[in-house]
Structure formats: structure tokens, C-alpha cells
Image 1 (cartoon, each protein chain N blue to C red):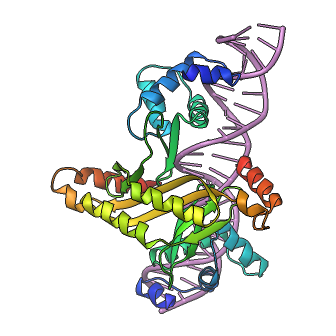
Image 2: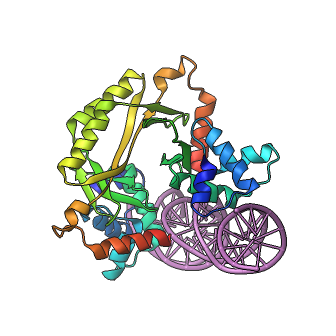
Image 3: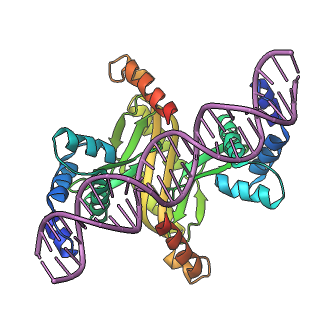
Length: 155
Length: 155
DNA sequence: CTAGCTGCAAAGAATTTGCTAAGTA
DNA sequence: TACTTAGCAAATTCTTTGCAGCTAG
């Protein structure tokens, strides 16, 4: 059905585009352009970085992917199709991404916007957290934390 | 009192740093590194871009400024001192930044994090809106909208 | 055929950093 | 004096784009 969209836009379906799009739409979780590129590369699929970026833009326009900025310097994508809206918690130690939904918050946001006389087109709620309390339960590995810190510093 | 902080950190106070810091802390609203740089330049203050960036980082560490990512490619800063927490609505047409606070939302966020066993270190709630309804009241100039679009496209 | 696509390398944009002279405490 | 800065230019990082040759429809 994505092919329909592609054609309806007067665009063409190529091998690279099909490969790249399939990988993106099958992806679970949150991924960067580079994640996808490496993944395809590991599967010996020949798709250039430029094509990956162009394809991601296409998918976002078609509302099949949503993108987020989790303040770590790289845009992250996630499947939008057949998924209900949700927000994110980011562990700044291990960079884990935890999704959550809260109807009440959603509702209040709408209300704030409406009361101000605007129309909401999009919203982004990200809670930055630390998982100190989780660590001992094995859900946040200290090694990952150190790695994440180093990577962040390295940018 | 910022000077105290600077010295307590074993840092030194220089003319540029003083100038740049004063301008940043007196600034109302949300500004980018470049905004600040231009502003100082217009006042014939000699402070290089590198020093502006370094100073902003310093101020953020000291919690005298907070920074936000409004998804337009440039980090924005705002005074944090003596200000209560608030969230933002961004008009994607004219790029207006409207602040708001909502205790209930704040409270619910805390609750979500707590219930998940994390500790919240920061959060970011940005509502993207359009001000079509406002435009006719003269609060959003069509010219500004076109400009904003062009600038966004130009990135 | 011909508009659209790909890959590559080069361009961009915002920010950061290495280095040397200069300034602070 | 000893250590920290400022400024500059070069480097970085992520992403976009121009172009020439290729391909779908």
C-alpha cells in the first residue's frame, strides 16, 4: 500500500526504495538514518545514505513514520502506521527509550491550545529520566551508561 | 552573583565573558547563540562566536539559562533564574513562541515517571500550533509566515 | 522516451575544538 | 608565574544537494 502512495505521487518504485522502505516499516523501536543504513549494509543491500535520507523523508510525508528529536544530535524515526500516539521517556544514562501514553495529559494539551485560540498540529512531550532505581534490577547496565556518556561527550 | 559561581569553579572573569553573560541574562524571550552574537556585535562589543558558545554552555551548567530545541535547527536559550518552569507553544507559521504553564500537566508527568520507577531530571513539552485563527486579529502577520516558511525550507 | 532515481562527492549549517597569544589572579 | 581565555580557523557531525548516468513506466 505504500507503493500506491508512491505512485499516486507520481513517484517511481525502485529496488532501493522498496528495500529501504520495507526495512524502515518493519523496524521496531526508534532508529536513526544511520541505524537503518548499517542494517541494510549488513544484509548486503546496496542502498546509499542519500537514498536512505530521501526515503525517510518520503515515509514521513506519507505519515508512515514519525520522527523525534531526543536531544542527542540525531533524528530518530519510528513506525507510525497502526500505532496510537504516545510520548517518550528517555533515560539519559543508558539512552533507553520508554514509551508511554497518558490520556489525561493529551486532553489537557488540547485544552491549553484551544483556550489560546490556536490549532494544534503536533506536539512533543519528552521526559528525561535517570534509571538509578532500575539499575539494580538489571534493567540498566552500568556499562551502557558509561558508553552513553562517552558517546555524548564525544559529539 | 554569577561572578561568584565563575570563581568558585576556578574559572576566570574576563571582559568578554562579563559582557556576554550580562547580555544573555538580561535577554527577554528566547534567543539563539547567533542572536546574542549579533546583538553584541551591533553594540560594538567584541566577543567572538566561540566565546558566545562557551559562555552559553557555562550559563546552562550554572542553571542560569535553560535551552530548548524547537525543531528548527537552532538551539534556543532563555533565562532560568527567578523564573518558574513553563512549557512552550510554537506557531509553525510565524515561529512565535508562546509560553504557558499547566500545573496539572506537570503533576501528571511527575506521576508517570514516578510510577515507572524513574527519577525525572528534565522534561520538554512543546506544542506545535498554527495561528490561523489569530491572523485576522493581526497577531500573526502573513509576511512573517512566508518568511518563516522560506527560512525553514532553506535549511 | 523522459521524468524521476541513485550514488557520489561536495556543500551546508550549527557547533565544537586545537592552538597560540594574551589576560587573570 | 601558572593557569585560564579569546579568537581564529579548521574540524565535526548530521543532513541535504548538484550532477551525471541509470531506470521505471
